[in-house]
Structures are given as C-alpha cells and as structure tokens.
Image (cartoon, rainbow, N blue to C red):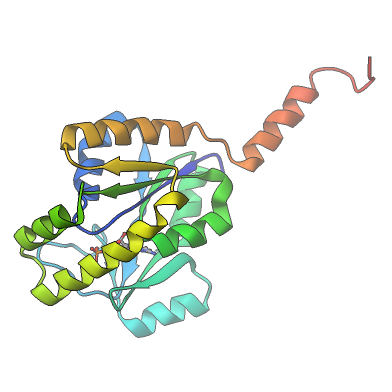
Amino acid sequence: MNGAILILSGPSGAGKSTIIQRAEPHIGDFYFSISTTTRPPREGEVHGVDYYFTDKESFEREIAAGEFLEYARVHGNYYGTSLKPVREALAEGKLVIFDIDVQGHRLARERMGDRITSAFITPPTLAELERRLMSRSTDDPDTVRRRLENAREEIRALEEYDFLIVNDDLEKATEEFVSIARAARLRPGHEALERFRESWLATVSNTPH
Ligand code: 5GP
C-alpha cells in the first residue's frame, strides 16, 4: 500500500469538483473515490460517476457487513466511502482523493491517519456561499437552508485540517490545490517508513562502532 490519501471537505457549493477538474492535468495519476449515498440524484448526476445511488436498506446492510471505511449522515441522508476500491488504489500507489464531510474526515483519520493529508475548501464568506447555492438552482429553498446550517457547523472543524483553501479566485484556489495534492503524494505512510528504515539499516553490518 504505497499510495496516499487527500481528503477534501467543505460546504456543497464551495467549488470542490470544479477545482479537482481544473487541477486534474497537473496532479498525476489519482483515483477519485466515488461515494455511496441514499440521497436522490440531482439533475445531470450519473450513477457510478458522481455517486453510487442506493437505498437506505442496502446502505445499512453494507454498514453491518463492515464495507465502509467511513460513513456519515449528512442532511438526513447517508453518505459513505467503500473500503475495497480505496485499498486497491492505494496498493497501486495512487493518490486517492475523497470529497467527504467533517465527520467522515475524523473517522478516516482514526483509521488511516498516517497517510492522510486534508484540506478544507470554502467560499470567502457565508453570504457568498448562500449566493452560490441560490444561483445553482438545483436545490429547493429548504435544501439550501439545510446546507447553510450544515456549513455553519462544519466551519467549526477548520482546525482539524492541514490546509484551508479559500475559493475566492478559482485560478488561485486551483493552484493551491495542485501544491497540496503534490505534497500529499510525498507523504509516506508508516509502513513505507518502516520499510525504508529497514533497508537503510541493512546496508551495513549490525556491529556497533
Ligand atoms: P452533496 O449532497 O452536496 O453531494 O454532498 C453533501 C455532503 O456530503 C458534502 O459535504 C460532501 O462532502 C459529503 N459527502 C459526500 N460523500 C461522502 C462520503 O462518502 N462520506 C462522508 N462522510 N461525507 C460525504
């Protein structure tokens, strides 16, 4: 398992997917972890591309079977990351990028903290987030209200992240993201450090000088 993990969190409407798309040509081979959710697809969203859409019963069955690296309830729906594809991508030495909420970040850190780098992405202000969510018009007013409430809660967890990206200027935010993704790839997990130390020590005999 030579790969590394980069976790992105931040309110829906922060521009996470746009930033990842724009950064894609500059960050090398990566695997974007597709989450499973019980929320209904938004217009234009495709099963197996944006999310794996499923129902509550199937999701709860997968929880019981221990198939999630982490999962959380966000805005009344389940969202979770399946362990298997993540392990496979890590074994291939890839950078695995997650877009998950602050609860998911906490759980993933508990389980794989040594190989995680994380960044919180947000618009410059709560008012700007509101403006963006309103103009997106994919969500009804009630959903927008819930997302704003959630954002107020999530911003409390800022200190738990390695980096903060303020998405005011998309160009600048993308550049910052590229630097963070490159650094994330250079972060060796404990296993890799152990292997390096052993091979480093094995180059001379064990006799102390
Ligand atoms: P949306 O409904 O806008 O696609 O996502 C809502 C929130 O759920 C976002 O904050 C997003 O980061 C989070 N989310 C998406 N997938 C996952 C996941 O697999 N696990 C967790 N914990 N949160 C997720």
